Length: 106
Length: 145
Image (cartoon, rainbow over all chains, first blue to last red; front, top):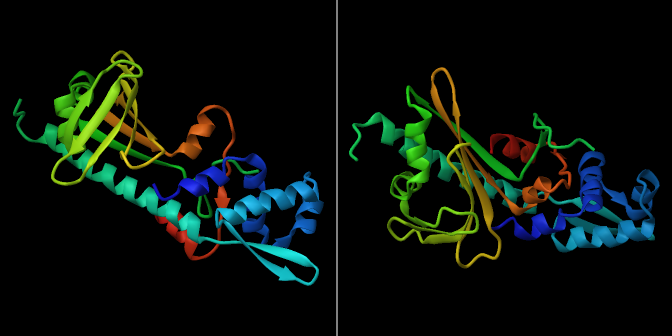
C-alpha cells in the first residue's frame, strides 16, 4: 500500500493540526506556527521534521528562519489508493449484482 | 479543527465506501453471498478460505495471476448481517479492514462495503481524524476520488 508512510506521519494529532494549518494558511515558519497554535516552538520543529521525512512538507531557508510548505505528492499517493480500492469494489459489486440478476446457478 | 467533513474542499482520505441495492432481494438471500465462502469468492474474484470465527484465518487467491491476500476474520455476525475482516498482500506489512453489511429497505437489500486504511483504524479507537483542505487540482482529485 503506497500511502503507508504518510498514514504513519499523520497518526499524531499535533502533526495533523500543523499540516492542516499549512494547507489552509499557506507556507509558514516554526515561529509563526508556534505563535498561532498552542504548541511550543520546539515541539513544532520536531513535528515538522517528522512531516518532512514523510515528504508531506518541504522546507526552505528564509533569512534566519526555515519556511515549511505542504507538498501534495504523498497525498496524491493516498488519493491513488482510494481510486484503486474504489475501482476494485465497483467491479466486485458489479459481480455481486450479476449473482442476483442472472438465473441462480447454484 | 474540522473533523471528517466531506465537501468541495474538505475530504477525508482514509476510506472507501460503496453501496449496492439488490432490488427485490431478501436480506437472508443476500447474506448467503457474504457468509458462504464460495459465493463470496465468486464476486470478490477468487477462491476464499476462511474460518468464520473472530480471529480465524482469511485467505483469498484471486483468479488469474492477480495474487492473493491473507488476513483474519474480525466478526461474521449472521444476526447483525455484518462481516468484518482484515486483509493484506503477503508482501505488505499493513492490513486494511473490510466491513460488509446488509440493510433491508423497501426496495430490497442494500449491500454496503467499507474498506479502511490503518489511519482510519485510529479513528475507531477514538483518535480524531482531520479533514484536509486543498485548493486547485489536488482538491479536484480528492473530490473525484
